[in-house]
Amino acid sequence: MKQPQVFTLRALLDESARRFSSRPALRWLDGREYSYRDVELGALQAAFRLAEMGLNKGDKVVILSESRPEWGIAYLGITSAGYVAVPILPDFIPAQIATIAKHSDCSAIVVSDKMAHKIDEDAHRLCPILDLGTLIADSESDSALDNNSSDQVPVSWDAFPQPSESDLAAILYTSGTTGRPKGVMLSHRALAFDAWATSSVVTIRPGDRLLSILPIAHSYECTVGFLTPFSFGASITYMDKPPSASVLLPAMKKLRPTMILSVPLVIEKIVRNLVFPKLAALHLPKAAGLRKFFKSLAVKIAGAKLRKTFGGKLWFFGVGGAALAPDVEQFLREAGFPYAIGYGMTETSPLIAGMHPRAQVYRATGLPVRGIQVRIGESRNEAGEGEIQVKGPIVMDGYYKEPGLTKECFTQDLWLKTGDLGAIDSKGQIYIRGRIKTMILGPSGENIYPEEIEALINSFDFVEESLVYGDEANGVTALVQLKGDILERLLSGVSGGVERLEGGMVRFGGEVKVLEEKAAHLIDALRKGVNEKLAHFARVKKVVIHTEPFEKTPSKKIKRDKYPQQVK
Image (cartoon, rainbow, N blue to C red; front, top):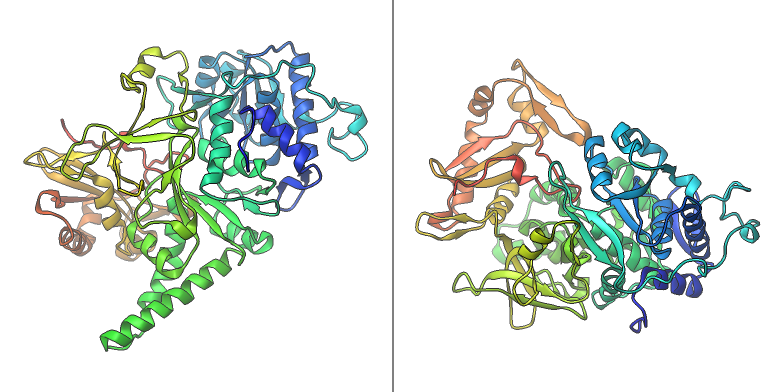
């Protein structure tokens, strides 16, 4: 696709509605489907509704909703009219929602029926509350998008000022907002450019079917999973239930998607629970040559079955939001599964780098998307690792109402400091080692990356998840959550018991001392097995059993600030 003449979300909507008018754009898995023309009509209806309430260009509109087709219609209506969208993640609690709504100076809050209970009295006092369904529906018919009602719907954007590329399009509040809100300001140019630049990573065509399983209010899903496929004529399908295995597998069988975006946790659980146990149970020949041949064949067969599980038509499985575990990535490579790693952050709209599945390099996050620059700041070691820094049209304008915090995020020559440690090889591939803030200093000043140790720990079949941190008294320490079935076997008959939680997670309600005694042999095996693969200065000195699930961000990363950190 050639470069657009104008990078605004209205131009993106206009062009897609013109090129793909009658093609399916947004749909429910078992329900309504909206064509590209329907989406533009609905967006216009939303814009006029807000104008009737007295909103002017630049006014802020909060969107609080689960992922659904109407979310995207409202978002495009708000931004195309020159208003500013303030998406809020559905996992936020009412107090956080009210704080964000107040901090953003919103003039209206658009909310779905399912999320309406999260609008508390504080939010109600701030501004009008609008129902998402009503916002895009025509007052004289069941829907502005009915086939016979287009003559009742505004069909032109002429009543609204044309957004410019530099105009603010959205303010995205990062996950975990509890105290001081941090709203990332993204311009029309940043979002529309990143949506277009993604085509340098992967070529999307009309007829591609994307199954959405992540929160659309998250920057990763909003840009790469919504704006990008919408720009190229693909259809996006939403489910009305959380993407648990019991919901996801039938959905993939029915839709047979060609594309899915995911966080590592989803594919890691599928591979470790459904694939690895079967591979481990195989009886392979003892002869080294035959053993290698039959193991490779078994992995390829497992990969073909996995792809069939995803509907059989999948050619792009994008992974972002966190690092993919090395053992799982190695399996996906050997199995020929079409995975691709992406790297980005909310402050860059978000995609910085990525690769097509056929070109994916092991442990790399790909090449920078077109039109941007990436460099490594001051080197911290002989490997040439340093902070990854970015410059280009995808970079945020700053944090809303936070000029001081904004200044801290940029170098003197105005490169965005990502806070990620990494390196770039001779071919331009970006490799990430971890976050600067989480890096542990070894006894002689060595750099220890907790993410790499966690990946080793998580590869053990009795481990659900882990978090590694530095402690002056105990050295490198690992908090480890055991899998539910392991806990139940260990604690059979023990008072306190195991409590089953949503999503298959478990919590132990008894004394931690009892659990540690029962799991002593596992702890010893874990420490020994992990340390055999680590340099002496990075070895785990202490393992602590974590008795309940870790708190997570919407992209399924552990909220590290909730747990012990290295004592500086």
